[in-house]
Amino acid sequence: MMKPDASFFLKVTLFANGAVFVFQEHYYPYFKNYGDAFSVHNRSVVSMIYSMFVHNDLHHLASNMIGLWIYGREVFVKTSSPLWKSPAVFVCVFFGAGLIGFYGTILVASLHDLEFARKMENFRRAHHCSHWLCQEFELNSLFRPVVDAWGQLEHTNMSIGRLSYKTAPRIGASSAVYGVMAARLYTSVAVSGDVIHHAKMHSHEIGFLVLRLASEVVAAPWRLENLTLSDNDNVDHVGHISGFVGGLAIAWSVQRLSLGRRQRTATDGFTKYSMYYAAVLAIIGFHIFRK
Image (cartoon, rainbow, N blue to C red; front, side, top):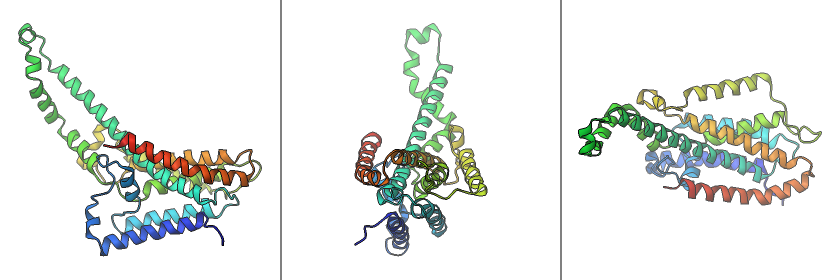
């Protein structure tokens, strides 16, 4: 009996996403509320994995699954490398990039908090009373809550934007698909020894990826000023970019593993230890990013 390869896992992932979409649309209305979906406030690893299989509408599902099918076949199926055909590699790239995408969103939210704290501190300093009466009767401490409330009102748009960014459910396999896209880009230019295991990407394909990433970078809310409600397009651009970076890192790790070693030995070793890697990643993520 043949062992399942990456192609089998790719098809299972496609089917699972489609099945969950049908289930949420017709049989389980609770899915519509996305109550268990990942958000910065609901940051468990379980919610992250759950969110990778839930989509907002048919267009959202189709765009992700078509991308996963096209790029996934190039990376995991149309390759002469047994290592890249192994199911462990597919699992690490897909779920690893997806988790890294969510962690990237959490990291940017933390940067937003630091930036907002600096703005509030600057506001307090600007409204600090240096008169001797204020020092004598500690009026600055007494009126600190009033100054903070005033500062919050002055930065209302940023406060609402931060709250929206943290509570918005992040659903879909987009970050994971971006990781597979990154693996496709890396494997098209990376060479293992003297053998090329993947087909080269055409210049127009690379150009499409570059333009796609550029648009994501421009649209991502890196600064607090980008978090106004009018700028919110309900797309997790940070997650997409983080997933792409994660996919590059994982693809590089896989390629480095295959260098200077026999392909069979590498496949066996990676199949064994990649599961440990995935488990460690999940445990670390749970303990670091839990509420």
